[in-house]
Image 1 (cartoon, rainbow, N blue to C red):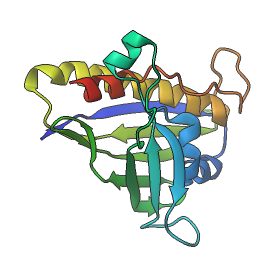
Image 2: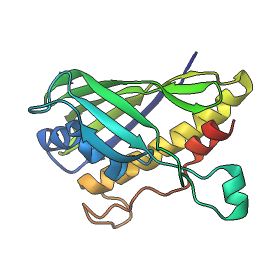
Image 3: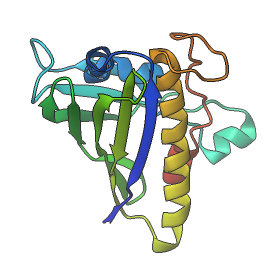
Length: 193
């Protein structure tokens, strides 16, 4: 098993409690996190420690489908994974642990990570994101490629999140972040390995 650690910090021009509320609601994740197409809250009541969400992963075309002009996921059930909030400390910290999802022959990924929030210098919120997925079945030679693709995808996700929550990116207004691109480099890498 390999563990890949990615850490990203960014600032948002909103109060800590507002940012926490948005991040704690897992049903918001498909809006800014490129690997998810849909989310469903599985636990009843308000979001709290132990809250669990089921996510439908984005489908990517296979190499054959790409060569023949087909679309990913046609006639296939989309894979799902569950994430549970294992640390929930409003309005400062959320940590999650996820179920393993098969991403290729003999390869699976178990997502883990956290967001820690604090007041940013000059106002707003500093978000510290940590992603530590556990990957099994990844050949050693592939790890650097996986790490680069994973980091790039998380950087794009954080940029979308920053724009959605009011960060100042390229003149885009808060709430107008583009939908995640459909390139899905990481998913393609894992499913085609």
